[in-house]
Image (cartoon, rainbow, N blue to C red):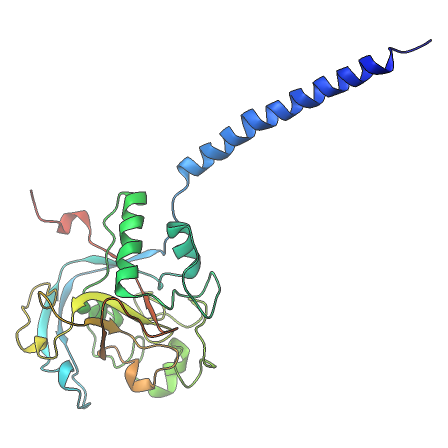
Length: 273
């Protein structure tokens, strides 16, 4: 028996192909956009740091003028990122790659200016409805020192154990490393000493410790420089100390050295309206 004419077969095949393509264009984009609407930026796990009082500053014998005088500081509860913000997290939030020489989604952001950190926080807060921020200098030191213990480095007082907790000049092989490769301190925070310097919110003043308020200090009202903490992969052991202070201008960063970590205040800490 003869089949339908060749022309009719071609018409039928063409119609079925067009119908199939129409289904793809109509339904596939809808499914894709539905998932993206519910997608949240990937951010580091946040660790609750219980508030308390501690003696801030250098209580050892180092002759670092801007780390003295040792003074009492009392802080409210706050959250701090388990790790430094990674390049992968930056891309999820900002939609583009972070500037980096040692490029990897699991490595920390490494060429961030303070202004870059603020731009990231603004975008992240728009996307999440939260109020992420940089930690204050006092919060950073309190967390690095495990709620204010007398510790030289984040996680240890023993220089022989420093390499278990920190990437620094003696063990980094001259590069950054993926986060969470070393031991955390007792609060569960990684790389508080070493890997990359971390911006905090405060302006820098060499004499600020002498006039710092006791409760929740936020640094000077203005200044030329902003504070960096924690040291980096190329820093000596004394530069990755938990109380060591460094500084730079808001619109510059040391190449391959500077990143940041998120902080967040519990809603109960916010001023009553």
